[in-house]
Length: 144
Length: 335
Ligand SMILES: [Fe+2]
Ligand SMILES: [Fe+2]
Image 1: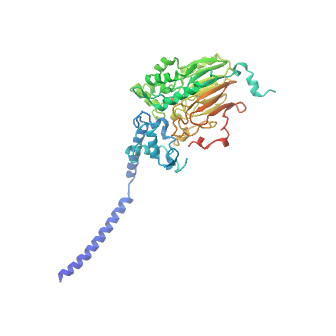
Image 2: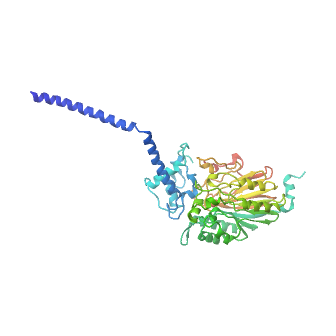
């Protein structure tokens, strides 16, 4: 007699506990995603700045390619790179291309170097730097 | 009454007219051993080869500075060898890339003084070294190589502005004192003797003082390199025209959106460069000197040539084809 009764209670309890746990979890996830502090934002911004700064070093260095030529030689302050216009149709490729592909075009040709993969930390640093010099310019994808 | 242009031509000496060629900013760059950056070599070789085909021959040539990229003997020697193939008298201008490794010593060994004047067919020419800077800055760096690298980086926040300097200005004042105010004056400098954008040294710190010395002359003209792009302007009696680089083009300062700059509104820009053509937006100049003013033909490696000529009616240099707003083409729009 006691046995089944206990079992029933125990089943209900388990359901309750599972539900409670579920709510708890959803609650916990929601709180973690919603809430970040000013310090977090500063830290993340600083992470970006550090990568962009690394990009500036690569941009001005003669070591990115093989002949000592630096990106900055033709693009002071990354000017004339127009990051806001990508992706866009690129005449010399005959198709729509993204900014990192054009960075590789320059690494291969004027710099006589070897292309980087799109997710190479160096490429991410270079693209970060290019964008950092173009802050506030409205997006204009496809513009030539 | 005679048209003004004919009256001006009647000033016999300057009216005779002559031509000269202008090559600049070849930036010969050493890699190692006997290797140099191919594209920059090609630019200079092509300019020299084309200039050698001019017929009739111009009276002389000018090289506008930045023969080398990092001022080494290897670069200056290699550049001098290629430039040596040019047929004709050659006048040299000092650029910052020739100067900041050894403060111009080796360049002067090859070419002599870095500022001087000469007369040709009634025109007085003044060549300046306009890329000097503060002694404190020169002494700031551990090694000459470091100093050269710092000055070579155009957008360097640790850079220093160009200037002609007091000593040279004093020399220029005396040099110009002996000239009649009706004598046409032409100044060759590396940096613009006008203030366009300080962040990239499209600028000479004491440009105003130099302009003051040129103002009393009926016809003053300044030709400058360094900017690797077409620029022209008129300030009072002074007509300014820049020359192209044989190596690579530079963006117009306005395309750096984060800073303010002052490209002369008179300038119709060169075409935006197509990166897939390595000679695009590079070239050299053919100059026609007449009645104290200069018409410039920009011989562009991969674009239609441009011609910026003295417009006697407007009393300023103007592009003979694209000056009108409606005549401009989409590639001339820089952003
Ligand atoms: Fe230059
Ligand atoms: Fe220069």
